[in-house]
Length: 79
Image (cartoon, rainbow, N blue to C red; front, side, top):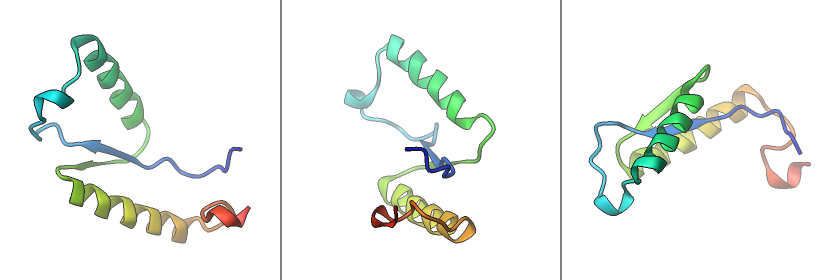
């Protein structure tokens, strides 16, 4: 069911070092880059450097969006 809610995009910062077991193969890396380009097109994104920063960004962004565009669907029991 489409709720017509904004898409919030959070992408890991390119300067963050990633452990080897989290690095994609060349084929998957190309797909990941293509997906990241698609996500970044025509929308605002936030880049994060560590899990705590990501968590803070998600909470803040959700709170801001709920205040900017209140309506049915933000809370699960709301629809």
